Image (cartoon, rainbow, N blue to C red; front, side, top):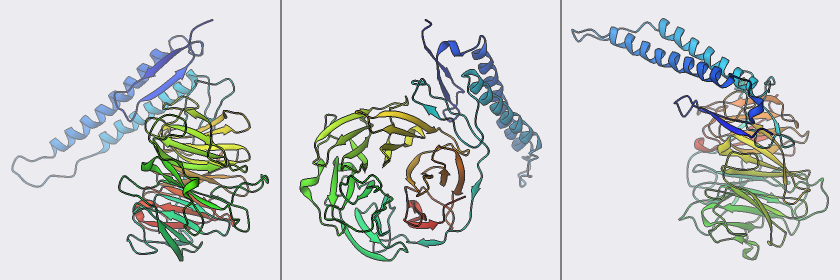
Length: 437
C-alpha cells in the first residue's frame, strides 16, 4: 500500500496560498510540476502587471514639476487579465489533480465517509449578491436604550422578541419591529464582553420544538432561559427572559483545558433533551457537551484545519439531532451527528473565497421553516442562503453603510414568519429582510 503524502502549493503571497491535502495515488505523474509551472506563470504575470503599472506612473512624471498625466492602463489591464486566466487554469488543474469536479453555484462538499483528511475547496459561479433594500432598519450608535455599540450576538424567542448584546455588556430586548422592551447587564465586563446568545424554552422530548435561535414554541415555560457565552470570563451564564440570573446554572468560570474548563467561550446550543454544547476558541478550539444539570459528558475537536477540527467555532446550532458548527477561521461549516457519542462528522460546507457557496469568516447561521440555511459572513459582508443539502440559492448585502449594505455583521436569526434579522455590527443596527431568493 502506498503511503499518504501532503503537497503544498505556495505562491509566495499569503493571500494566494492554497493547501492541497491528498493521498499520493490520486496524483497523476507530473501533475505537481504542471501546477508549479502554472503557479509560476500566474505570479510572473502578476508581477509584470505591477511592474507595468509602475512604469506607466514613472513615464507620466514630468521633469519640470508640472502635474502628472493620467496613465494609460491598457497594458496593465491586459497583463491583469492574463494573470486572472492563469489563476483560473490553476484552480481547474488543482481540482482535476484530486479527481473532483466543481459543482455550479456551490463549494465542494466533503462527506466524512471515505474522505477523512481530504480538504479541498473549489469555487462556483461568480458571486451574484442582491442589493435590494431591507423592509426594516433600526438602531444607531450610542449608549442609551435602543442604541448599540458594536452589537456582537443576537437570539430570538418564541414571540419573535430579539435579544442583543453589544460591547458595553448590555443585553437589550426588542420586539420584532425594533421597539425597546427592557435591558440588563452582565456582571463583569472589564476583561471583555459576550459573543454568543441562545434562547431555549427548556428541556422537552418533543423534537419538533427547536430550543435554538429560531423557535417554534408559542409560550414561555418556567425553564425558559437566555444562555450567554461570557467569552472572556470562561463561562456560560443563564438568565430568565426578564434578566434574572440563575447562578447555580452557570457552567465553567475557570480558564483551562480540562473537562468543564474553557478558553474563550463563543456560543451555546441546546438539544431537545436540555444538553448544552459549548464552543470555545484560542488554544482549545473544541466543543464540550454537558447534560441539563451541567455535568460534563464529552468533548471533541481541537485546533486545526483537518475535518473535525476547528479554528474559532464561532456559532453553534442544533436541528434534528444534527449540530451545525460555523468554523469561522477555517471559512467553512461542519455538521455533526448527535446520535453518536462523541458526535461524528457528517459533512463540510464551503471553503475560503468570495464566490457563491464560499465563505470569508462566516460568523453565524440559522435555519428557516423550509429547511433552508442562511449564513452571515463577517468579511464578505453578505448573507448567503442554501438549500438543506448545501446548494447555493441566493446572496444579499455587500460592503457599505446605507440600508441594504453591511459592515462586519456578527449575527443572524430567522423569525416565525421566516423573515431574516441581520446584526449589522459595525453599522450599529439591525436590518430585517425577506428570505433571499
